[in-house]
Image (cartoon, rainbow, N blue to C red; front, top):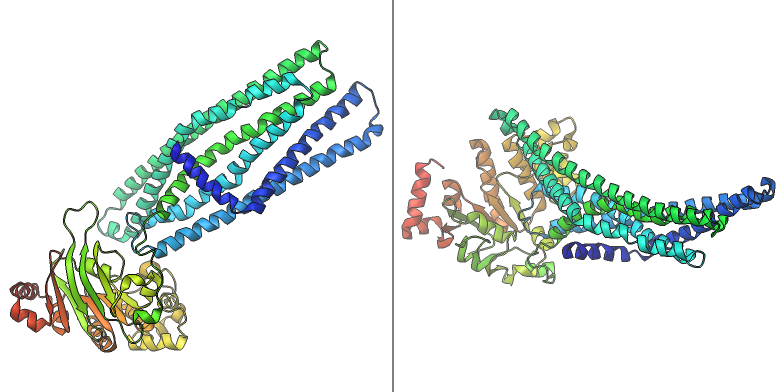
Length: 583
């Protein structure tokens, strides 16, 4: 309950950031309440004059027009109040989306968050806040202002009705609190179930080719059905609690109104209360409980919003490596002329693991040289590369760029200076041009064609009906593996950054494409810092130096021929390469 209260306070603090909209909702709600009171008072007066004073309708034209005008202006106030609430909700949702996207770009790694869970947070989660800000919070204001205004107006007119209203008014909020705990639990379960279903469905879509090749399509359909069924059951449970709670709140409001009607009717019967006053109080009694009844209806929209907000704030609270370090001038980061990198006592230990993945790694990656990181599977090669990329923060130690701590840069500055070519490069579901401009938005068409010629892809692009506008599909599935690697290499050429990182981009390619990619990488090292993870003997032999890892420790580093001569472990590693025919 304390967590829900804290979360509600956070969300309410966002509303305060829009004083004009929030103030407009409050003022319009109060004006609407006052107009409603006068509307019912004039209706009671009108009926009393017609029925008991037998006045003709033509003498009551002004009063009737006044009632119609009050109804119109009251409707106008309600419309503008709802418009302001919608506008405020849109502004807050936009702000949340901006914060989430910026957070995603600042984080070096997304941790336990999958693409599906982030999509659910960014789309469904943020949209769930609509009901909270445009319906629930304005209804809270109405539930406070309208009953308070009515009860203050009734007090001098009828003390007994005032007392009944005062005693029955707290019943609806009281039962809302009682129901709220169970409702929040069920809503949280539904939200987690939605996350699981989204993740499962996205995994199924992304792996559909593999599933079909393994003849697992029917089984996967059954699994999707089970996950969907679980979400349906969670949703039905939420709806069950919602309908039961609405029934209880409606019953309480109806009974309270009935108590008022009975006590007013009895006093009217015995002549203790004039008709006009009695009829006015009867007209206003449902209006007194209506905001609280509507609050009960909006209550469950608020619970959905709170469940979504909880997930959003958990994601926004993820720690950001180096988030508190000021940005350094780009020139001081060595963008001219190059970027030599040094590691000093780098250690990495992940949570819930006893042993370190990397332990006291100290080595240099000089400018103008090709350095290869080598070692058996699980030796820490990929982790070391991720440290250089700043995708993970070392537990201890410092990464230096041209003698300066790399942590002095922001993520944006750092990634402007580094190009990264993995084994499986990522392509957005857009055109060839859109994918290439990811590396440099300001690139001209001539520059794009130049690097396409360099990667020997220009003829292929020209052969496509749409040229650079040719759509690649998701993950570039319209391209062969060789074409994907060449296109990814084009992005490296186009970016022209001083440091190039490769995770053996020639693996799983034919010999012709391997030789092409290999030669291009070799040509790049003349005026760059090139770092590769080696899975082939040819890569080791051609390197200027080799960083040899084993079980997270740096055993040695130097030229391939030097390591062969002085380190038996490296000799055994190379022999294993030869036996596996990984030339």
